[in-house]
Image (cartoon, rainbow, N blue to C red; front, side, top):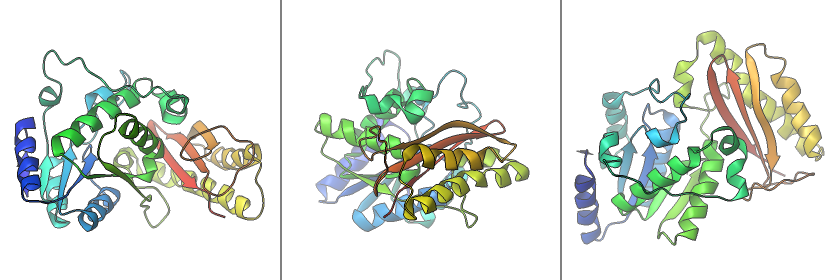
Length: 282
């Protein structure tokens, strides 16, 4: 597996693959890789000839009081995992390589749907995401890019700017990968103490209760949201950031839920903010 550290290196690598007639799959990550990430890599391997992963903790998507400095960085372990699933190259630049002196161009996605959920709680977050993903798609000459459903709003944002800017890439959303106990896999799970990790199970448990109620005929959004909130509020270590149910992928306000809508939550367990979601099934 090639390790690419500069923009020139990834551009030259991608150009060589294109000249050889190969399709390229891109999997952007911030590292601290877990089984959820590796599932994205495997999906990319199935659907493209060459897979490029990025490991880059992107400073411009973090707010001033967020966990940029504390975000887990373990590049050697990440490389071993990437090699294990057959990734062809990993792009691991320094922030100064991606945002050199004089950098002043950003991608803003300004639809109402960006002001909800994480976009509402983290001002400027999606500007940072959209900017770095645009750069990565261009650098990698990606034919297809792969993202996890856990960050479903992020997928909506990426699909929007890819369509609006006519970027020739297919965006694939891969279902959430969970631990056996139901906890959605996340790099931020590493912050949790054993007690907090047990408490974090309330996220998936509350969503599953509402999903079951929906299957049994409960469709009023406020009722379903209250089921989620009541369950989360039973957990002393949990503090609700948001509980929302929207149409998907438009993320439009709805009063009654139907199959295909999304239930999305953000909850603080101790000092760690976790997100999870379920797309409703009929």
